[in-house]
Length: 428
Image (tube, rainbow, N blue to C red; front, side):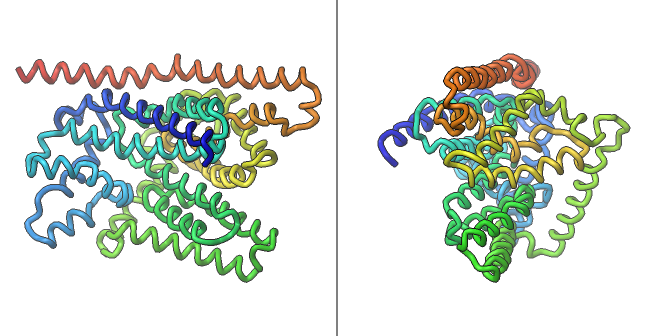
């Protein structure tokens, strides 16, 4: 990396570090005790008890093994609970069995290490892949846009969940395939391993079912692989991914745990397809019924269409065509699945789609600046006009991000602080 990109990288690292530090303050609130956590959060009290169980002193090695491997909550994969337990382990080592008295500290570590840090890493990796840190303004602008997306921000605030780990695993698959560059060497197998881990965390890796065959076909078209090698490499990719899935979820050796996993996930699929036991029209399927969620947390439909166009341009022009093609083949089937086959509508379901998609936000402006379209470049007035329009679109949507949806996030933090005040007043 030359001095320019290195300097840009250090600037982005500093900004991400400041962003990480700033999030410590809200993430330290609303969890002064497990009882308070029941009031301020929906999902965290459910998953927190399993981390406590993993770290509670064991009677013998068999009990320790059971606590750490057969953790019990198979809604999410073992990597989520393993890294969560590691995040809280320092508190357990310092305070011993009394670590459960430090709920606020434990939740702060969980939120920062499991929800914030992996997402920041994923964003910085994608920014690098799209910009190569060639220019400071471009890298800073793309990072700023991605840091402002309300759904990304909400994932960072008082929210300990496996989605960020899932997004990071998906990002690593894309990055490793980019680094492999149709050589089908070690980075190809690292992509397979990351894909298996992504499947094991929250099934996000399943949606690479279109990406990998197309990538193999590209290798065949460019005479990097023979037809028999295409099938051999494809089969080995699946084998490595399955091996990574099993190794990253060691509880699968246990028949009882496997049966419990199947029961939980079968129920989850039914809920995703039909909604909870409620006749609400909220649970209807189709793009029209996702409009509020997507427009509130990710941007106006026209802005999302702009991102889609930007991705398509990136697939056809510029230095990142293959990388953007990988993104398109990954997010397209997942978006179709969510829009037409999922009834419940949490915004975080879209994170594995939207984080890579938002990394293309500056592709169209970059195309105009760097002259990817000669017909447009020859008309300076047209190029300047389109560039001004695109910059205005990005700035307008960023302003909307700042002014509107954050009200819900801020209200959540304020509610947690208010509950803390009530808790302290009642304990005096």
